Image 1 (cartoon, rainbow, N blue to C red):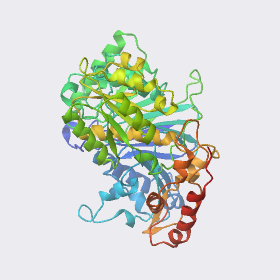
Image 2 (tube, rainbow, N blue to C red):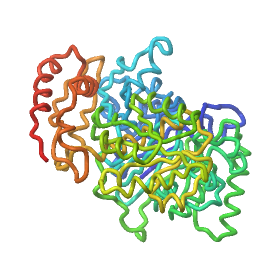
Image 3 (cartoon, rainbow, N blue to C red):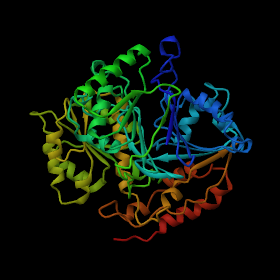
Image 4 (cartoon, one colour):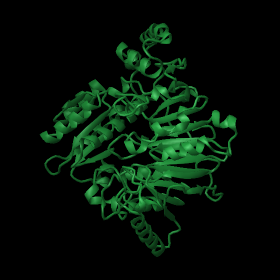
Amino acid sequence: MRVQFWGTRGSIAKPGPSTARYGGNTSCIEVRSARGTLVIIDCGTGGHSLGQKLKSDRKLTSAERKGLRGHILISHTHWDHIQGIPFFDPLFAPGNEWDIYGPNGLSRSFREILAAQMQHNYFPVTLDQCGAKIRYHELVEGSFDIDDIKVSTRYLNHPALTLGYRLESDGVTVVYACDHEPHSRLAATGDGEITGQDLRHAEFVSRADLLIHDAQYSAEEYPAKIGWGHSSAEYAVNLGRFAQVKRIALTHHDPLRDDDAIDRLVASIRGKLRQSSSSLEVFAAFEGQIVDVAADPAKGSTRRVSEFPAEIPVEPALARQPVLLGVADTRTSAALCEAVRAEGICVKTFSNIAEARKLIAKDRPSLVILEHDPPRINGMDMCRAIRRQANGHEHRLPSVLVSGQEDCESGDAAAVTDWLIKPFTGAYARTKIRAWVLRTACRWIPSGAPANEGRQLASPLVTRNQDLEPDNRFDRITGPQHERRRSPKRVAKSDKSALLWMYSRKIAPFESPTFSSRLGEIIARAASAPEKG
């Protein structure tokens, strides 16, 4: 693969003399496979220059420039990762085709969120005025194919729902992980052990030929930036060593860090690597840099199989099962209740294990949040009590412990899924809750689908000059269930409002003929689906 950096700055564009070497534009990366497949990862302000290059690329014929085909992977919709979209010329050229991918939203679609920055009050041109044919894809954790590239997705640790991307093609692996904060505050210094959710992150980046990782802060700066959703350079390097990564490109440079400061940070890291005789190659990515990533025959295949289809739609009813909250501290409980409700999810509270068991049996929750403040309250004991139940759902129910500090070793023994460390912001709590709710909803997706149904069910919204094209691939709502998953009855009896919302949001506008002609058929099929005990 060939990787070119068009934007390496984080948070806000910072052009000027002090950033001239590493660049002032925000995140945007161009990836080309050996076969020529074009994938762009994030479209910050660096997307403008990339768009100009694609528009005038002399290597392309006139016909190819007019019929450009590409894919844009958006990690999340914070401004520094999407501000280039309104200025990306290839989206406005008729004849071009683009697929844009991003995290699944619960309350608003991915397309609606992207369009918001181009509303009349903020921008003179709307997203609907793009001349190119654009398909929007909402993603969860899993994998999908873009021509000859396999893309795997994983949620990162950030105050907005954020996806990391792992691209694999022809024996080459490139991983992009921005914006991401270490789950463990001890690991953030670069010296702590990789455990818990950080271990899960390490598995995602494992043995990459090139890891492009958030490195906005230094270990010294990080304590003042806890909860801001970014890594220290030292953490990224320690992660890379642990995960046996070949090369690391440090990116998402802090806007307050000038070129000389980046040089000093990289020199310090390389000095430590030499002292430990590490073969890991580390560099700070700069704007315009091209990195050719070749396959390593000694590494062997790293292509993964049997991953969940990342494009499969998550039914609103599945993503809105209640969240259980067992937190005695009134202030913390109120903050978490507000975070859950802000995601449009019902929250139910309990004060003892008996109440928790009743709620679990009755409501089939998607997540349980427990307080851990020993010796006053031992959330691990509560988690063990839930896990001891014979019901299979309880064994798989994600449990997040709210605590002033983590204890991953004891937490693993108690089957704790994740930690929410105090103090935390409402944005961080919302994101963690949404990620685990979506993971649970994905486990409840019906099984037994054809191998290509992940893409068939994705039903991407297609727009061109405000003309929505009907998509007839929405041909299944219910089906056989995975073992120990949500009962067929509860899936088949999805309420009409959820079906209306899902269909109008994914397939066609309310006024379209497709909506009128197929709505009755869909509701009838859902209501009459056979129930299997």
